[in-house]
Image 1 (tube, helix red, strand yellow):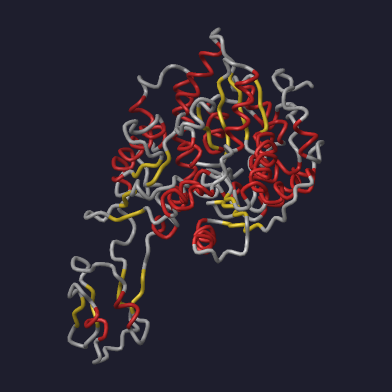
Image 2: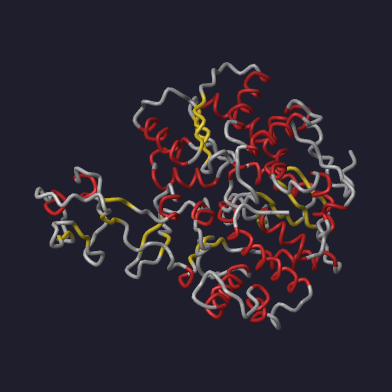
Length: 482
């Protein structure tokens, strides 16, 4: 059974699983340097020049799996030693160069990086090249091509730069922590920092009589993942890890939809606040529009607030597909409510690190959100939910939503809105294409995820947001009884 889209994810999972297993057994410190040998046994050919270098890189992966550089606030880090396989020359001359005498490429190059061989064929000196692309634009034969690194191409926030050693670096002033670079890097040289060790220790403390219970708040996108098991078995598996109760974040989405509709009707123009990467993108690139961001917290924070209101000693772990949530929990509006974030990739590693056979577990119950709360997981879902509330409450407001699927579409909508040219009064922004179901830390990515979420939404016993809100104070029982 293939759990992940790529072998990079598989390698990342293998490291996380070993870290979880050893942390659970209190052997992490003693076996720290043995993990690379477990992951990359020798003698064996690897994707690198030798086993020893591969193991050295895995050591770096272990450090990040244990939390990474705590002094670095960014949740994404580059493993320098793993970042060396991509082409270092962004622009190159192909065989279609005809050796013309116009030499337009040479005349527009500001760095004098273009020269010619004896046949008048152009060459680019990578040491001089500024990667401005002017030569490519003027070539009459399209003989100069651009080879962008996958991380650079994937980062729609333009936060990836290449340093003097041709290594990828993250510009923290531009980074929105969406994690696109993590998923796009074919060598896994960019990784999100994990708190699995902290969560393992938290669960141990709870089991050992500490006076708190650990709640798992799961994002609705989970239904499109873990396809080898039913959602009720996943709930059982999470409780098997030591969590007291499992709550749907979609219940928080119902709260947010209800509040956001009222705020929109009052202010008459709003951008959604559910996606932390989208919110950060506005703050960095459109600071004059910050006052247009909804003042409501995200569904993750909304459900965590309710859990801690009901159980003052509760610890809350959000489980979802989103790397940006790891940055959101550090914000003032979230840090008192959400203690840790666990991605779907990390949850799979937890299951296997604890030897939890999810497929053979009985199905447990999950508190029901509404259809609208559950479809927050895919692009367009927030707008549909807001529209539902406007109709339900009879608000005197006509919604004209701009649904933005990915940061490129977000940028276009925000540019238009900043210039007063957007024919819409609500921008639903999702940094990941497809919405949360396209999150960087999903096990699998693809169009099927959207239909899975819609099917799951239609299974909700509470069809309307009103009905789901009635049960919000009834989830603290471990069995989920109302």
